[in-house]
Length: 252
Image (cartoon, rainbow, N blue to C red; front, side):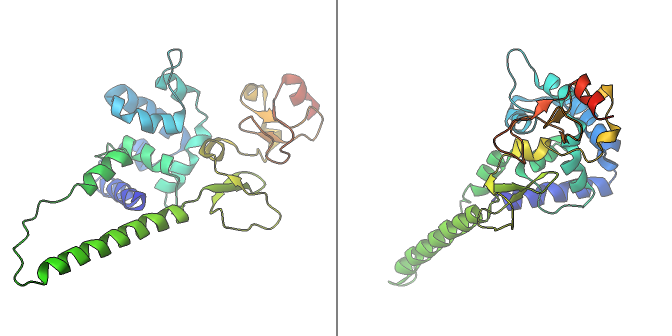
């Protein structure tokens, strides 16, 4: 299950950190340093087997846009969940974060699909012949029970997956779809929105350097500002606008 894969990846990271076998950005992470580390790792050991991992975090590569270009355009804030994980500030990171860490530390086998396939390969253990007439029956019965436990385990892991999210006021938080949050609208999980969309709590820090990188919900003074565009998280009937110089001037 993915939970076991996650534990192995995180454990390997801590082992490498204790052995000082990591680069400085991974030993002392910050969003900007991790972005640069991704570019470095991509240049040094890109492999097509990692396309699934890179696509889930940076977006789909195309004939016009390479993974390198996607990385260069990625806002450093998207790496903050990984920073929090490496600093032991969160215990339940999203799968895309775990996969990105596996890629950065060259954990193998990866991604999870390959690791899971390896983990499920049956061991060829010789079975001794039955010693009595009930042995064959007991073996079949044990296999039935094992199958039931396996199905139940997979079912429970699917039920426990956080497949929904809600807007906290400044970011989207993944939750179980059965959770009830007072006053909140629970919607289907969108990992891209969870990773990229944050409300900017200090709009007074925005400058002309922020043009083309920040979105807002209004052109008037007192607008709310965000790190990504799309549907307004506080009003599903509206869409966020890319901040212009005029909008920036209106806030002064």
